[in-house]
Figure (cartoon, rainbow, N blue to C red):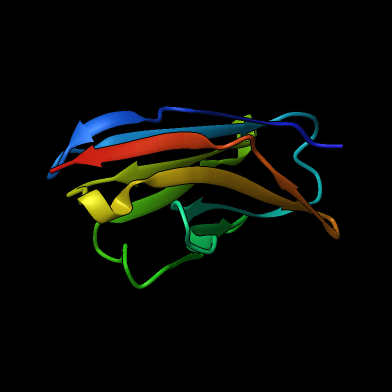
Length: 115
């Protein structure tokens, strides 16, 4: 089992920045992909970005050029740096980790961007 603890959400004005963190419990062995998803009210969960153990990243089209995913393998932690935030970025953000063949999810952290 892997427990994920997220932090860093909150309220920010449009154009501002926030940084989310997600720490995974236990050994880093087997943790291949770490990433972030988000879900706005009435919408489907969508991918924000992900990063492999070797640092390869992928991003959803709506956040490319504004958001950056990074990870610290020694700390089993993944980060999401969000810049130039827009009201449409408002959502609950979920951390996700794939360890061996299983996917684990964090409890979610609210990000609200005011116009």
